[in-house]
Image (cartoon, rainbow, N blue to C red; front, side, top):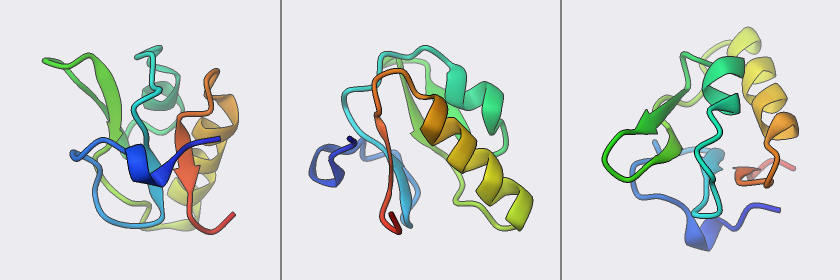
Length: 77
């Protein structure tokens, strides 16, 4: 389970976030490309944009469920 107290500072404020257990597998960027980006210098994913539609919300949840190390958190769950 993701740890909000150990999240990357690049995350946009809001309910979704990526913590420092991310292994840069790119799965979240594939599932929700409008919301997740890779930090090229540090080699990790981060939430670049909180979801702004039901479709983006569903994609972010899909990314969270598909994360192999559970590095994506959702404050609502």
